[in-house]
Image (cartoon, rainbow, N blue to C red; front, side):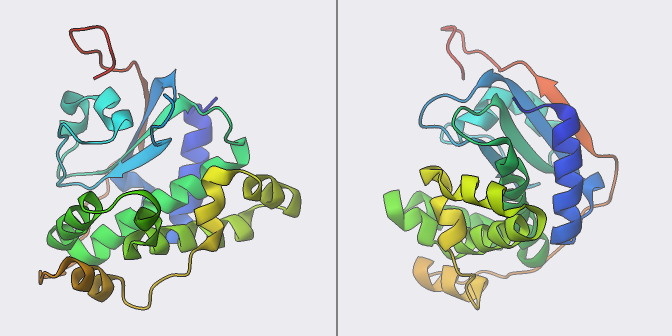
Length: 214
């Protein structure tokens, strides 16, 4: 089970490794077991909005909650119950999402939206080969090796879902490779958020009128 104290501690440690300010983040812990096939946690860039194709964990947070921190915060959502994923994986998984936040700060919204267009065009094994995913996995692997013991690393390495995390090499030019694959040119202009207070909230999932998770 993922709890607020654990998330606050792990996020603060991972932010130090990533060179990010934890006071620019809000994290929602959704009070539900991760549905089969859904991503365990996800990042939403400050200028991103929830859409029909947004990952389920953020749709469970809901547009109203996410929108309250739009344009002011990096936003992360995580299921409170992650069957099959060891507790030791939370820090590296958060570090993966922080790599996306760092990429936004270094390259800006226009590039991030271009990367999202590329993501929507690929499926399956190709997803892990995207430059920004390779960057995030390489950062998460480096953090795992720096913060975990051999037994914990071996445990994480035995989980098939985490295999990409330890297999990726960071691209030499994330922006250049992404735009080349997409066949577009956009301005990659970084920006920073004004620090506020780290927010970690446990929330009930938003429900659709049908009674199913939105």
